[in-house]
Image (cartoon, rainbow, N blue to C red; front, side, top):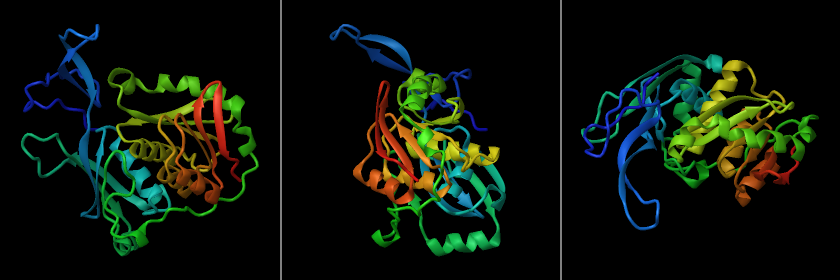
Length: 290
């Protein structure tokens, strides 16, 4: 996997070969008394361009944390409907971008090989994203191409077990799965917990959509997509996050912040059980799911 690199072109950067992946150490001026400043070193979240290239065709360029990019590519392909299963990705290779811009952050390319049938479907969609950390629809060619409401999932008899008591157990444990955010304070996490309240997997990224895609990639490799359990996220619940969950059969979502109105409408349409403002002992159920 690529490692996060300090940027030697920037005089405020400190090249640190031992820097944790996904972080960059930089010099800052810090005030602790509301007035005077003192020099210090601080960790910042790394954010680099990542191009997703399908069969030699660049499909999307996302700003992301340079971590777990194979999982990111798999999760993105699944959550965007490019493939229906992990087996349809014949090969995934992460490499430095062929064209590096001097003075800019290091860029990466993820090369994904699809079957000819899936590649033809991708070409027909003609959806090229210019991704950003805060927007899930940037670069869509027209409003007609924007799918706001996901398809409806089959009813699940276990959804009622994703209740306030379960959230009260799992949400306080979420910070333990955010080592990058603990040091840099600018990184989202997407985690998955089973119905017994055990957090099984978690992925961090500067973009909430990217973190979810990385988690989806992990769950796909583990054969857990559609299994009883819930996705936990440190962000708000946008319609895009709900739609991504629905497209891959993840039927319960709980977020630290509130959802948008469109996020709630998407959850209602998809049958996703959506909790928001999950800050124990408080939690708000917006849609029951099923």
